[in-house]
Image 1 (spheres, rainbow, N blue to C red):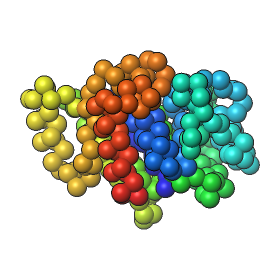
Image 2 (image 1 turned 120 degrees about the horizontal axis):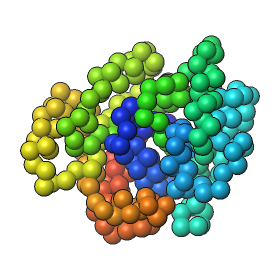
Image 3 (image 1 turned 60 degrees about the vertical axis):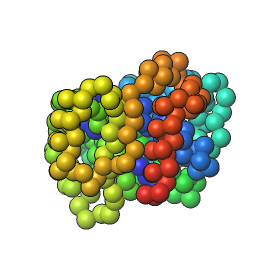
Length: 253
C-alpha cells in the first residue's frame, strides 16, 4: 500500500502525520518505508539526522536508472534504529532537481516506475509531499494507492481543496485509489471555528476519516526534540490519536 500525504497548503501537519503514522504502522508490525519528498526535509530531520547529499530521493529524478534500495536508510528514533521502519531522505537540492525534470516525457511516472522494484520489500510506503502541486507531488499522486489529505481547523484551511481534487483526477484518470481527509490540530475550545470548518466539510463527509488528531503541546515538543510522539509521550493524547489513525488506516488497507 502506497499512501501519499498531501495538501498544497503549508502548515496543515503533513510531516507530523507522515512521521507519526509511519512509526505507528511500523509498531503494528508492518514493514514501512517513509519517503521524504519535501525539499525542507523535516521528516528526514526526525529519522535520519546524517544525510549524504548524493543519497537522497533526488537521485531517482536525476537518473531514472537509480536503484531506490540503495537510498534506503534505517529510521532512527532517539538515536536507535526503529524496528520495521526505514526512510529515504531528502534535502534542499530536491527543489532544483524538480525544476530539471519539468520538461521530461512521462515526468509524473518517474517515482512509480522506481517503486515497482520495491513492491515485495515493504508492506506500506508513505510519501511525505511538499506544500505544492509541482512535479514531485504529481509523482506522488500518480503512484499512490491511497491519498491522505490533512487539514486543520482554521478558516482558510480548506482553501484549494477543490483544485487539489481536480489535480488528482487529471493525474490519476481511471486508476483506482482512495482519497481520505484527516482532521488535524483539533481544539475543542474553538467552538465557532470548529462549527464553521465542520459545515465546510459537509460536502466531503464521505471522505472524512473517523480519527481526529487533537492539538497538543506534546506533538509540538516531539517535533522540536526530533522524535515521534510515540516515544516522546507514549501515554498522551497525541499518541492515542495517532494509534487510532494507524488502526483506521490498517482497516481501510
